[in-house]
Length: 139
Image (tube, rainbow, N blue to C red; front, side):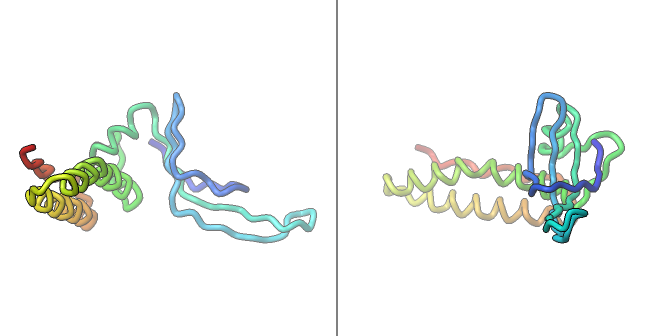
């Protein structure tokens, strides 16, 4: 993994995956001024992380490449990945609560909320100790 400050004439995409590299871009700021031809030009500045094949996927599961250290940007990416694990679970919970009279789904949805809150708190210490996901109610 390499980290650099980069610049572009176009606002960068946050995540770009290719066969040989994955780019994660964050902290985007912009400056506007005149170029050498007197035309108004906006330049976007950002931090860019370059991941070799497999490094990005490992980071998303809480494992940094050798020699790397957690920072706010990398840990945010890790936590976002963890939070996404509940997207389909929430949908299933809400759907089942709507079509059944089983209040256990309300309890499950609340447990998912609590799980996500616990993942958010990991930011304070850059911990990767993700709690177990709540168990679904019996069908």
